[in-house]
Length: 168
Image 1 (cartoon, rainbow, N blue to C red):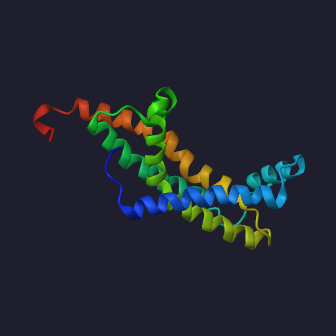
Image 2: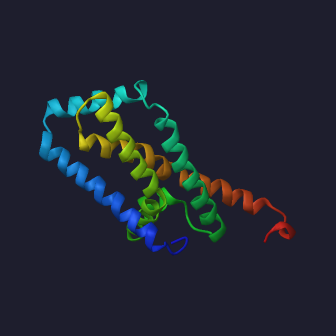
Image 3: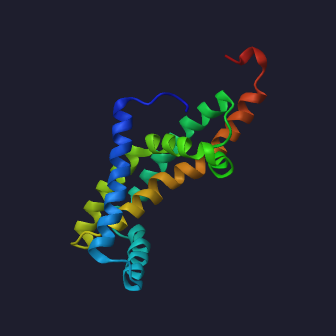
């Protein structure tokens, strides 16, 4: 792990994971998972970027990218392997690395859940908890997952090309 998380970070990560699971279970319990529901989910997901609150489609991935940048540079300085690559090729390390990612993105995930609930109540005048879970994962965790490894590689290359007297 890049550094020991604080109790607050752990609490936020558990809250984010718990809410994602609760929203997903609640969504299936409320609406089921029929072909009609899946069609509605896809249609609603595709309509979101063109509706109100479009800024979150930029805000959340940018925030996740910032978290990925910080963690990726730390990984490069410590000589750790890239994030997604490690998760895919070393199953014994996957749980720990995913936990790091959850801790790093928990605030962005929670923000995404709140923003999507507001969006749904404003636009749909109803609440689809499963969709809120999907959107927050897509906008917060997926960008982090995809960006941290390449940032680690670029940072490692950059650190490696600096002259020795500049290294600290």
